[in-house]
Image 1 (spheres, rainbow, N blue to C red):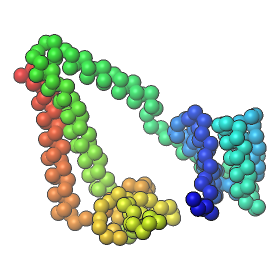
Image 2: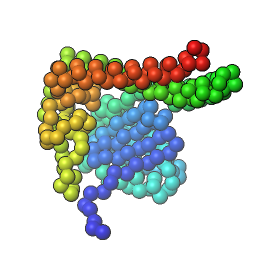
Image 3: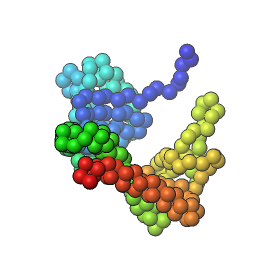
Image 4: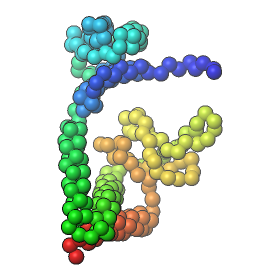
Length: 260
């Protein structure tokens, strides 16, 4: 096999923490991605070992960030790559250029608990229907729950997309997005566009051409849709809503069958 001149970015992973090294910054995540810290390499004074597998990163203002390492080999390789990537000129601003984002979303154990409770309720309901009613009702109850959930998810996703459409129509910025090419010459599936801050984003909007008009939100550049004629948008969302509601009603009727 041939050799490539590009070396993949190194990542250290331990439990719910990661450290990723890119050409211009060090990205740390903690608590399974809930906390994300971006450290420009220009504000890193030096990095050295902390214990056998940890790394201590000291900034130009003497602030310290700790990285829990994986195995000793991976830690040593990451440390060497980090020190080699540091620029010759440092920025004394230090911590003032470090950004920290905290995602206050629901913790995973809450989702696991809710999912387990729902699964137990679902099994209990099907068993109760099977014991108290005819076998056909139990079969209907077994399939009606996932059907109703599917319909509810479709309707919920449609409402979310419709609200995005409204927000984009009011505050969106329209740009020309293009499709790139794979090394074998085939066009990529997704359109790519660059926001006002120079960051690249992908859009899964369909289209046969190599360019498309994409609308994105300035405060959330990843939120985007393709610009389409209003009659087509209304028709598309109306048909989708009818299908989603139909699935939801069909599932709800199956759930209500034992009580009819």
